[in-house]
Length: 252
Image 1 (tube, rainbow, N blue to C red):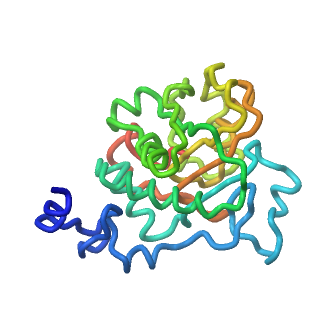
Image 2: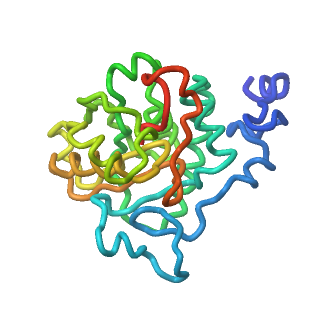
């Protein structure tokens, strides 16, 4: 039956409209043209200026609280289009595609230590009501299906409704913006190794704050998984600034 449905109603590519690869919702050409992450720092996933090194100078001098960062793609076109389709246009069909791309990248890692659970970056309840879903949770579900690593959706909370991160330009300002914004359940202490998952990481302020809270709950190691990583000095566009604070901007 599934093959008959696929024949009668073929999937179309989310980016160009051509026939898509089942079940990824992207055609082979668009998959091939996605901006891969390339050689990057193992701690923060930013591009490495010096070939052959594993950790960038910034992470060497001031390591982030997460041990390893895995990003599927760079935050460039057309990746930002896919993120926008999911977050601001409510196209939930994009989430399995982004989850597959991230799971594929995770599978390429040479780290033998596999996280015991995935913790998606939570939204504050007000923003969750306005958007109707948490994009990080939707992506995490797809990653869990592909990797077998379970998702713990309610074991962290966003306790403070912070301003949209993309409206704060400096790294320091973003860190202040999210300070004290999360809480974590002590149930997390039953896990030694946890991966927090976000859709886009820009400065890493949100991921760092959540990682600190998860570690304080008793977890020994936190990794960061994200679909897209913005390069240093870049800031995510607020493409829907006219729609109001509750549904705009990049949360991380």
